[in-house]
Each structure stands twice: as structure tokens, then as C-alpha cells.
Image (cartoon, rainbow, N blue to C red; front, side, top):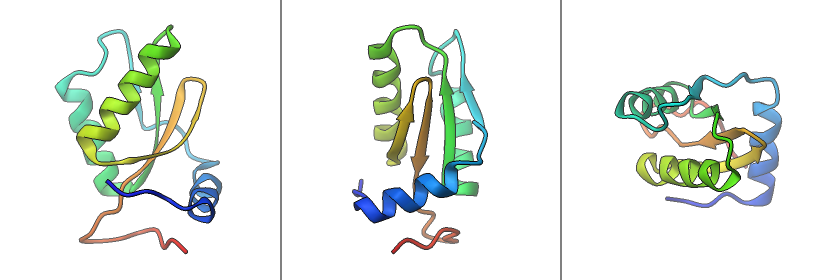
Length: 98
């Protein structure tokens, strides 16, 4: 896992501003099928938004941390129920970072 500098985070936040959540985690929580979709979305887009529909703030934070650990993605921003994740695709990079 890598870390992002402040200018890189600022650029990714700007790029993600207009994005809609591509994966929504519902009542069943973090299932293998949901993890598969997250990995596929990160491979395709590099920068994605997720919506975590958990009532408890700690449960949301735990799910996001688990997703980041399993997918080696970096949390760019979390606002309420929506998290923005970034993972570089080494074979076909789409986003240039400073």
C-alpha cells in the first residue's frame, strides 16, 4: 500500500467530485461478490466512489478499512456514507499524479 501526498489527494478529490458511487454496500454487508465488484471497478477506473449503507459510523469505518486492506487501495476521502478510493493500475494507468 502506498500513501498519497497532499497535492495528489487534492487532485484526486477534484477528479472524483463529479463521480457517482459505482458500488453500494447494502444490508448484507461486505460479501465476496461486493469485493469482486470493487476490485473490478478499481481495475477499470482507478478512482471510484463507494456508498456504505451502515448506520453506525464505526461499522462504516471498519468496512472501508477492510476494503482498503484487501484491495490495496488508498482512501482519498470519506464524507458521510460515501468513500473515494484510488488504486493505480500498473498495466494501464489512467490518472497522472503530480
